Length: 562
Image (cartoon, rainbow, N blue to C red; front, side, top):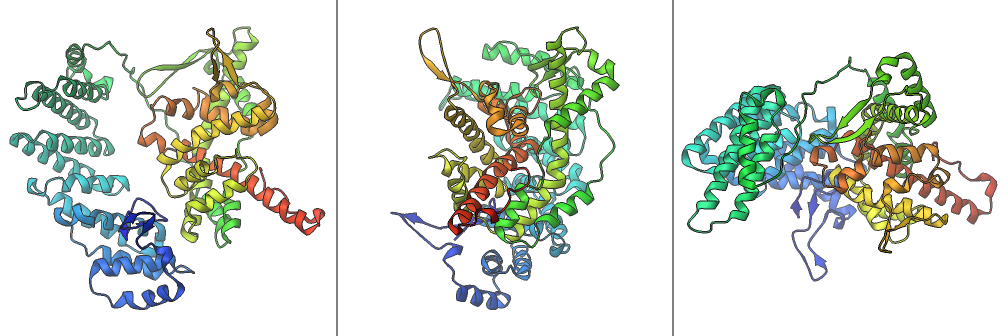
């Protein structure tokens, strides 16, 4: 089997697939196989073999054997950290060790700290002869938010390596090291060094562009243009505060001339508004308790209903109260900008003697408070419960597909895609989940509107009929009748409204990066679809069971918030 540590629940993939056949997978192991492997892994000497066998026991054995996961971690930690092992499967092994530590939590003891220290030692002791090893290790540490106390050391070491590569003329390596140093300086809050690294990286793109234009072997102005664009994008990431010191605006103008591109707007200087931290430890414990120790379906039922969902009327009343108590804040108009500096929405002042203006201001305020609430909901309710369900249950893609098939709410033919989206989120891949989920949600809304005899298309001046997007569909009053006022509000505020995350439109225009796709809003969007699918599946399942038994009076009640 091949180790693919990016997947929590299915970390092992077949080594070979050919003509509809494949090599071994964990599910091929029977009860006697697992019992045998469980009895021998402690006696194995080779670290990779011991880690593989113990990991398989942890993955497949029922009930779970935490001691097998601990043995796997200890074996993974014996794999050397060097370029040769890393390019084979060393990175995957250390990645898997970190995952197992995170899954076990306190059960892993101080092993996560040992992993962190070993990786830092390998990174900080690396030289230019190690090639990309320091960059790879830095990426692994950053992915799991490890090495926080040594951020400056990591950044400084990557910068030193970058400078050495610059002397050797290795453009690609010194650019990658500068990018790594930029990330680590930013994580450590050193804005001046972060900007310095951005400038160095941008100039590396410029040098590569010049090289491609004047190269004797294969000059390409098209490729050079893309390098100039990359340089401009790097320069654009410099904050306004630091632009004058680094002559950024003039440099951007020069590079635009090379590209013959139009001007672009820059973000105004923006500040950060913060509040005192909120203690959600009790909320987290209650969330874990709600799902712990339950059978798989009951655990999913608890997860899908760990939060009732937004109560739009209460949020609206609270927003109205805030506007009344703080009239000056509501009096002035507000402008909302995207992360790349575009104006995406404007909220009018509340008191213009116009009912429409006041309603617009109230809507923007309502969405704002809803979005603020999601952070606590995800961190205090959804995420802790999800971690416990992942730890105690191995739910595969086909299980989610089966749920979607048995949900009467999912349009025919879309069960596979919806199931894939739900599984991807359960497997901690919210990038994939979001990209699958958003178009399927739009299709779901469109199908149910069509079933209610609602027109979902528009006719242009040339007589061409086009389907309306999700934003237009959500403006139809029939949506509230189909989904209920609360769910209808959540879909609109979360996916369609520029005052909110605007996930559908941001994704459709390619404006969502990796960080946004794994944000609080994306996690909540995944959970909201899980809630819709699982509750409709659960109700249909219990209804069928009650019908088959002939005892309609003894059917299970709907889950809360269904």
